[in-house]
Image 1 (cartoon, rainbow, N blue to C red):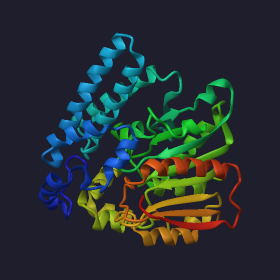
Image 2: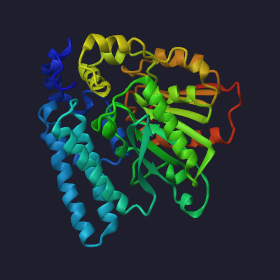
Image 3: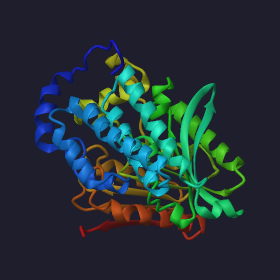
Length: 395
């Protein structure tokens, strides 16, 4: 919530959140979240030891920052000794843990800005040891700065033009943590990825740029413009993807820009905003109000009522993939079916039995599958009338 904002109508539920947090930990908001975090480079022991110290939701910034600072110091020591590989590993985890620390603060505060500055600084340490394959990017979107990270596959440094994907994070994500900079499944398959902190997200929001659907679509177009202009990128093979709330914005961009040749989402489809803003824990709503720079809940409700994907699918002609947990309470399955039916182009949907929103139990194979699917789309393997739904049983 923005500084000085009045409490949410359901804001008095914070005591419930704290009580449940002591029981469920990082699974409270996202059942199975650990599985997805491990795929993004988090280490199991570091997560567990950090979360053991978190006794209420408010403790998240302090304890994640403490773990990050330890790794940051270890990274600097390794760098000073000339141990480049170790420095890279430690800088990366310091960065994503600083990012996790600032995530829990849904207000514009000096603490949040300081933590994100540390996240960026540590990530720049990673870049120093990445051999030219990772770069920070700043896009101009009608006078506002939108920040991103470009990950290139090794082939891009040899003169080979490579396909590229623009990735839009979810509400609780930030650009430094996806894809996993230490084990990038997209780069291994020759795909470049530009991950944005879109309007309202991460560094972009910290530095003042709030979100609207219109502004996010313009940021997506700016990302495609940027990729087209890069000499290493094949402008005829551009895709968009997103996780969680990012799988709402990716179809929006695909519907408004014919340069998008494939659209692949992770974690369901936000067909309607009712579940995430009215039925889910109130932290989701307060986070998006901060992203939008709004403190008046009634005004926010009016804006949220205009959001949704109804009618968007009819404008999408490129191959589109939906990946959906059967038990997703933020992106209910019925909305995914409705959107799937409306998509005009080739389409495929994977439904994972017994999985909740983060798809943590299947993410280790879902991400490689998704990368392969995008390459198949670039290769024209899906006919214009292709439509397939697969239900995946638990492994």
